[in-house]
Image (cartoon, rainbow over all chains, first blue to last red; front, side, top):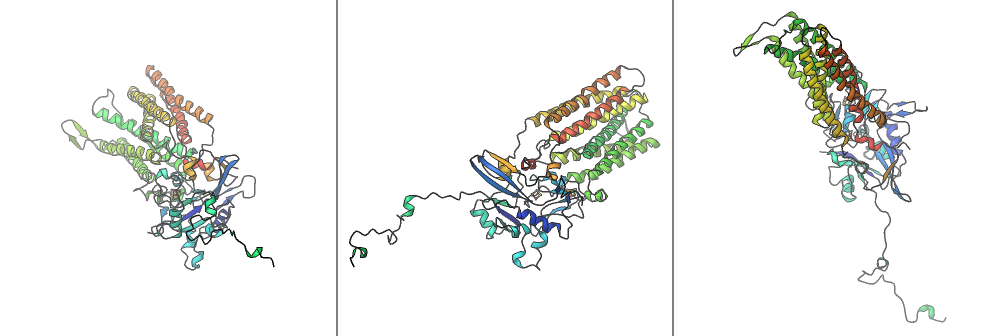
Length: 239
Length: 327
Ligand code: SF4
Ligand code: SF4
C-alpha cells in the first residue's frame, strides 16, 4: 500500500515561510472553498492554515541553534483523529494513505481536533467545518499535470528543498532512503500514532580535520604524497 | 482545554435527567419489593419522567450549539462502530424515547401485571420499559464519559474515574432533584430519595476527589523534546508561526489562569458536595413540604456547572506544547 508523506529536513529549513504562503495560496483558491481569514488587515487577524512554521532556540546563549520547525498534518498511519469522527467525514484514503476531511459531511463538532495530539486540525470559522492539510490531494492525483508538478504546493515552493515528498512505504523512494540514511524520526512517538511525515534531524555541518587526513598517510601508492626534492632541481640550474 | 458552555450544559443537564429517571425506577423497584412504607403514585412517576425528559431535551438542545453544522447532526450516527460520540448520539434519543414511554405508561395507568415472575413478582410493562431505560441510561453515562476518557493523550481524562464521576455526579443530582420533587409533593419519599442522594453525593465527592488527586500528580508523557524531536535539556519556543491567534490558541487553552482554576475548584468542592448535604440534612428535620431540597438541587447544579468547567479547563492537551510563545 502506498503511504504518501512529507519528509522535512530541519537541517536545511531556513524558516522562510514559503511553504506556509504557497499552501495558503493553493488551498484557498481551490475547489474546496477558501481557507478563510478573519480581520486579515485589522488589529486582531486570525485565520485558517494547514501549515505553520515555528521557531525554537536550542541551547544557552551564545551556544544556541535556531531550529525552524514546519508543522502540518502528519498523515498518521494510525490516525487517532479518524475513528473518533462520528460522521465519517474524517477518513484515511485507502489508496495513498492521505488523511482527509469531507467538508460536505463534517458537522463541525471539533472532536477530531481534540483527538489529534499535534494540533494540526483547524476549524474554519466561516465554513464551520474542520480543515487540515490534504497534501494537496487535488494536485498530487491530477494526472493532467506533468509528473514533476504532482507534488504538494509547499514542496514545490520550498527554496531550499527542505521538503521531500513521496511514498514512505516504498523502500527505494527518495523519502524512505532519506529517513533510513539520515536519521528520520517521528513526532511524539509516545502515542503510537505512527506519523507518516518524518523529520530529518539537525546535523553538525562542521567537521574536524586531523593532520594525517591532509597528508593522505593511508595512500598506498604514495603518488599523491608531497615529494620533497633534496638534490639539485631545475630551478637551481644557472641559465 | 477551553471549556465550551454547550458541552458543560449538555453533560450536566443530561446527567440530571438520567439520574432522575434512575431515582424513579429505584423507587419502583423498592415499591415492588415492598420496602417502602408509602406508595409511589402514577402522578409522581409521570411528573418525574416529564422533568427528566425536560432535562435531557435541554441537554440535547445545548449540544447543538457546539456544532458548526447542526443541520447535519443526523450524520453523526454513522460511525457507531468506532466513535463514542456517535454512540452517544444514538443512545441519547433511545434513552429519551424509553423514558418518555415509561412516563406515558405510568400516566395512562397501564401497569396491570403481564405475568408473574416466580411466586411474588408481578411484571408489568413499566418494569420492562424501565429496565430497558435503565440500561440505556447507564449506556449513555458510559458513552458520555468515554468521549473524554477515550482520548488517551488527554491524560487528565484518560481514566475510568471520568466515566465513574459522570455517572456518580449525574445520579447524585438526579436523586437530589427526586428528593426536591418529593418534598414539594410531600409524598413521604423525601427520606428515601434524600438518603440515597446523600449517599450518591458522598460517593461523588470521593470519586471527584480521587480524580483531582490523580490529576494533581499527573506526569505528562509529551514534552517539548518529544514534540519537536530535539534532544536537548534547554529548548525555548521563539515563535509559534503567527501572532494573531488561531484555532490552536483558542480551543485548547483554558482561557483562565491557574488562580481562577483553583478558585473554581474550591467553589465546586463547596457548592456540589457539602452545601447540598447540609441542606438535605436540614430538610430531614422539617415537617411537611419543604423547599430546602430544591435549594440543595439548585446549589448543587451550580456546583456541577463549575465542576464540569474545571474538568475541561484542567485537561492539558499535548498540542499546547507547540503554542507557548507568540514571538
Ligand atoms: S497529524 Fe493529527 S490530524 Fe493528521 S493524521 Fe495524525 S492525528 Fe490525524
Ligand atoms: S469536526 Fe467534522 S471531521 Fe471532525 S470529528 Fe466532527 S464531524 Fe468529524
